[in-house]
Structure formats: C-alpha cells, structure tokens
Image (cartoon, rainbow, N blue to C red):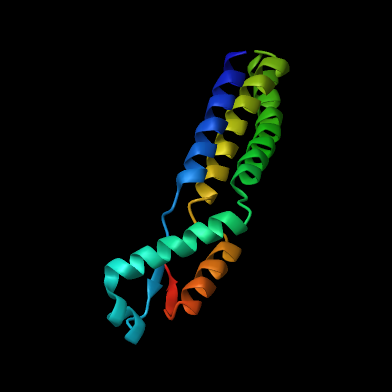
Length: 140
C-alpha cells in the first residue's frame, strides 16, 4: 500500500506544480506602444492577456500528468516484474514496486512538461497583446 500512497502524493504535487508553473513570458519589441506605455503598464497588459488566456484556453496539465503516471506505471510494472522474478523476490512484488516508481517518475515528467505554456495559450496571449498595440518577439 505504501508505494500507492507515494504515487498519489507525487501526482497531487505534480498537479500543483503544473498549475502554478509560469516559467516563460512574452518578450516585447520596444515599439512606439511599449515606449509610450512603459514597462510597468506593459507587464500589467501581459498579465491581463494571460488572465484572459487562462479563462479561455483549456489547460492540459492534468491530462499530461495522468498520462505520464499511467505510462510510467505500466512500464515500471513490466520492468519490476522481470527484476523481481530474476532476483528471486517475486514478480508480483517487483511489479508493484516498479509500477509505483514508474508512475511517480511519469507524473513528475508530466508536471515538468507543463512548465512551458501550450502553443495555443501563447497564440492567445500574442494576439491579445497585438490587439493592444504591442509586438511579441517570442517567449522566454
């Protein structure tokens, strides 16, 4: 039972990380609009556009984490079963440990994948900023 609890904890932690992660942000070209508005106002406009994108663009964070956990769990179970059988500890025990380890690793990978906004999210924010007069060079 213990590996299952650890896996559940890792999935919950991954969801929290995935939901909060905002490592990339749009980089604006210093056109007349940006020079007129200034950095502080531009940052407020970026945040407003991000808020709109949050409201309209569906996040894939939960799906990516669950998919990573499922794929990792299946792969870990297979490897664990073989390792358990070879080591003499039993295929069932090895499969359980491997599944828990693989699911945890998969969930973490799925959460890490969410540190970058989706292409649709970026497009939404870019268009919103363009409609406000800014020019987005890219994201970093």
